[in-house]
Length: 370
Image (cartoon, rainbow, N blue to C red; front, side):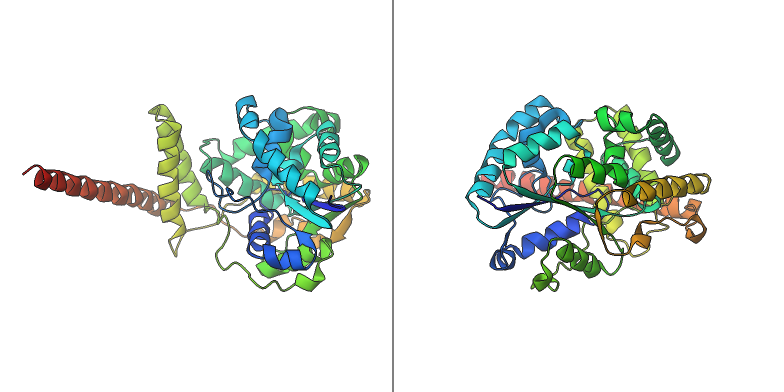
């Protein structure tokens, strides 16, 4: 039975996937250092790009996650049991990483702790400033098929936040603020019985500094320089013009009533083309009229965080958002047009390849029948 369990619970857009890449690539070195990062043999099923334990957590907590249906939870019940069995037969320290756990409510935390059954459960949160995280999260929503504008998205978050802490802590639908209100997040897990909560500040660049801070948070300084460091960038985001083009495409796809499978295929092809470009346009940033409000939210949350027992690993200034330092300009018409042209080329390339394959199949069939 694991004597110590470390839960890395995200939050989203804070380098989680990069850290999971490092953990997966160095799983053997971690074992030698006394830490087990379970990597399921079937981790690559579905659309996952790196091994983590999020889907397994669906099998235990199910509909606690607003996006998880009862059928999906039932499908993952075996994954959870396999993971739990591995945790229970592993001595020493086990490290689990699932950023979705950042949104669960207190009763679900107790259920998770009871299921894991360890006396020592530590929680590690990686985080960045709201002014950086929320625009990045919006572009991820667009990549997932949404069409809402950034202004509308932020307005919805403002309305949720205005309902207060009790609403955030109890309403299942208020999951985003349960994760991104760092003070509430740290307090929730501490009060639920975590032996230690560490907040790791995300520095942005260089990426290896984030790993070093994470290694410090889990008391693994011996692997501050891991044998294998991923060279590819995990979950490279879209730029502002690319996100606007994809949002319009999502709206057109929805109007055409295409299947989810076909819609996902189109987004994947277009996104891959976008990410291969060298000149991609301006990054996604908070609209000027929202920057002061995001900074105010940021300061409120940092003040609440300082009143918790959480340990800060890194520089607290990394979590602060300064609107005056925001120099990103809105995307130009030319940048949007270029992104639109790249999207058209992405689909044309795939269509031409498909046509070539079909032509060769017809030729082969003709030869076989003659």
